Length: 336
Image: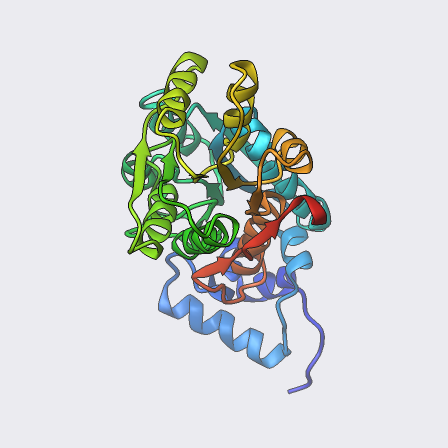
């Protein structure tokens, strides 16, 4: 038989089925009778058809909707807004595929808000999901709303998750890296404090575990507490400063809060301070030598790679690795 170019629309017409049915046969999704599958596959084989993802989206004449379930953009000094910037950048690059976003932001300091926003998003017809399971217990339960679509984790993961992929640093390795840095900065430290400001966050627990296990011969003090208000945060920091540590490891991006507290209370900083992410405040205090070292999680890259993973899996039918590790990038004042 003569091999010729054929579009997905022409295959559908020749087989006497809908474009959607042909798409399901090509990508092996959904319920299609064995008879129809055989008929469509025979036409595809004889025509030499190769799926073209752009043509496919245009032929289906529909948007590909990605649900976004992330904390408030203003939370964590704007960290989540940077992830969203990466998401939008990828969507702009993939404009021919007509990727649209359905966004729900949850307040991680408000109990039950993750679940409520997840349920609301599940009532919208979405084709895939990007989320951050920072509230582990709620996320584990709420993800049941999305069992029939691929979802991608950013920032952190869940041990029992059934996600398409996780775009994040290895939190345990990151914690070990922070410990190595602390040992270099204060090699003779006698008292080190490891801080968790969100005790229910899986990735912060893993960072703390990696940090603590590195210092087997030292007494690392692990301190966890909810910091939902400024008063709670100040009280929490006050209790840590009172321990007179030689070094403080802040397992999230709130290291700037320790500098601001010390300045507000005329406390001389006489401890090493290591934290995460080059947010505006952290970058400023790093440059001024009040923060000794910052580990970057590259939030923009996380958002960007999350969209690209969905694109490869759902639009061009490529295999996606179960994990996409973000490099552990280290900043001192000299290289910002």
